[in-house]
Image (tube, rainbow, N blue to C red):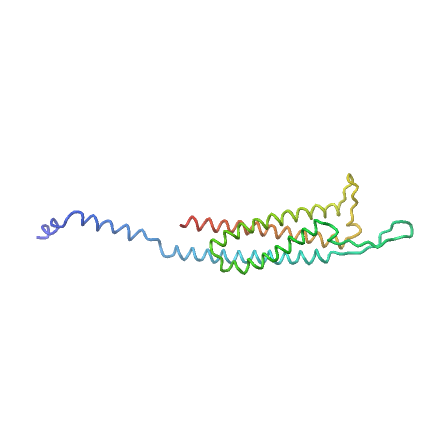
Length: 206
């Protein structure tokens, strides 16, 4: 009797029932979404941390550069000395560095606040803006570093005398500011890298 019932069932009904099995088992495991959410949260924390570092190093570089002023008595003849002041705004390269550091500080604090709630589309814009500011900071650091090196070592071929043997405090402030701007540029490079990495993982997940 049972064999007659089985034979009465059309064969396409058995095929439809068997096709339901892979559909049920092909669903992604529930911990996959949890792992993705945890990775996004970790990335957000790292992103905010680096933007705080960018802000802090830029502000410290601004303070050191603005306060880099020193006045010395320079002997010009036996028994005659002239008061000369060394300031950062005597060099266009240092003014450019100050403008770049101010931009980086403002950018770091604004994007640090926005980054907490940033979407994938906004992070893509962050990559573009981070790369643009990285180019500005790198060029400003290179220009200011070149001028500072001449002040430290001089250039005998161009007859540019070194000044850091006279203005030691001034050169120390400017050198520390250039170093901090280099750290800020490196931080921007890391921000570009981690955001591109996070975006590539989200694209691969789709």
